[in-house]
Amino acid sequence: MIFTRATGYALLALIELSKTKQPIDSKTLAENIGISKYFLAKLLQNLSKVDIVVSFKGTNGGFKLNHSPKEINIIDVFRCVEDKNFLVYECAKNQDNCPSNKANICALWPFLNMVEENMIEYLSQFTLEDIIHTKV
Image 1 (cartoon, rainbow, N blue to C red):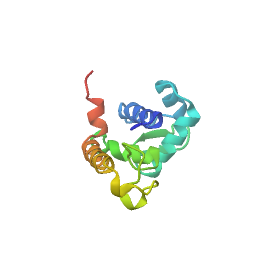
Image 2 (cartoon, rainbow, N blue to C red; image 1 turned 90 degrees about the horizontal axis):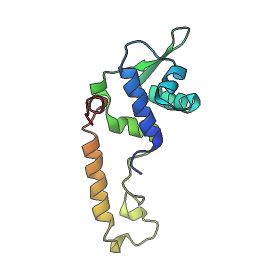
Image 3 (cartoon, helix red, strand yellow; image 1 turned 135 degrees about the vertical axis):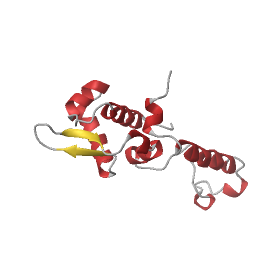
């Protein structure tokens, strides 16, 4: 799977946060996007660690975007939430690390590696703003 549910929820949370300049508490945000407050808290904590969102404590506390939507790259959100590199397929990134030791005869690896590199480059072009303004 390219994007897991976690990445989707993180993006939905960021879209919600983009609608206001005021911090939104995690309970309200979780209700708005229909997920567990605890699951969302973990996502927000990860996004906070990489400076995509900022948290505020206290009565009027919560989370808000730390950058404009046009400065938040989708691939950065993916890497933050998934804590791994983007994968099109489950195979070694380097032929020397092939678990089956058959990389030298694998006709599929070069193609899949090219697809993955192209997908990373393609997704790196998109920002949160692009998602917000995409029409169905």
